[in-house]
Length: 387
Image 1 (cartoon, rainbow, N blue to C red):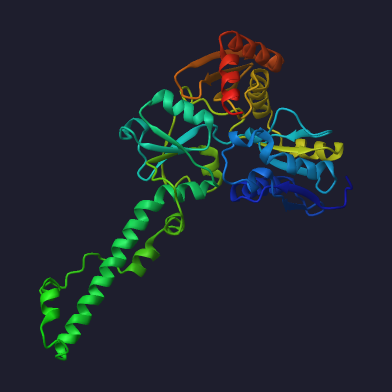
Image 2 (image 1 turned 90 degrees about the vertical axis):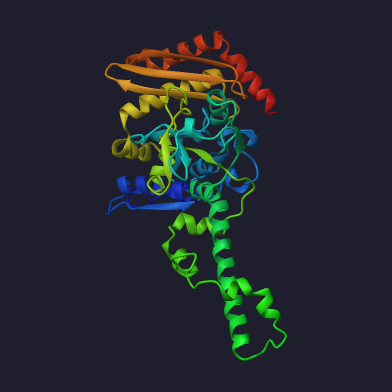
């Protein structure tokens, strides 16, 4: 890579992806060597009517970005690391893994309910096989339904039914008021000699002028937040009581404080491998060195290496309900893994403290132990169900 030209970073065009890429840009760019973000459409962006598992490969959001690097059109690419396959395009390496955001999942509701507070049979939306299985394992009574879209789109679908009904109710009240005023005007000028309007609108003429609402429709709309306004025009297929989303996505999107959330325990809802982590891939040695020196966070890299090693050994990809979460604690890496049947009725899980000096090899041994206890059978069954 030339030292006197702009570094071009490939990224998806979603708000979350652009925010992640902007973070990398701010950390890497200098006056002499600026950074340019290059928006790239991926297969996962083009296919909007299928869930991630139904796309058939975990790299649906990754390959197009890395291909820009392979072809020389971009110098590096920014990914949500949980979307990345365990094998890369020729010559591509993970140049840097910045410090991780919160790795867990949150339950999203309008008022911040806990999972146990949801009504029996509550409808919960998620795009993840893992989250579906974990929800059904914890609450078999739940009605878990598929939901895709960007973070803000999903939240708008949660808010849409109630807000749209409220808007219709307010607009209906305005129409009734206009009808009342019209009938009063007609009576004032003796335009209803037969008294029909008096009969039909007796309740209106005798109604006090106290308004049902303390705001006009325009004032009410102006009082809404950006998410709520978006929800007024959002189409939806189901009415959801709650969603499950990654806390990192909500935090990076700036939405965490604009909707009710409660954290799901990582012991029961083990996160996806590398959830909350960002990866920057590159090919050119000088670019790799530059990115690593400015961005790489060693504890995060070790933790996600353990998680992705377990994923690779079990072969889960995006077609199996599999969670792995690791944390560096001094000279050890504490790791918890969980593999479930797609309906949540069966689970194989375990924990292990791995030595940091050979964490990848130890993670592979941990995965082999899980496989011997039936995890590989659950993965194989899930893969067969999604063929």
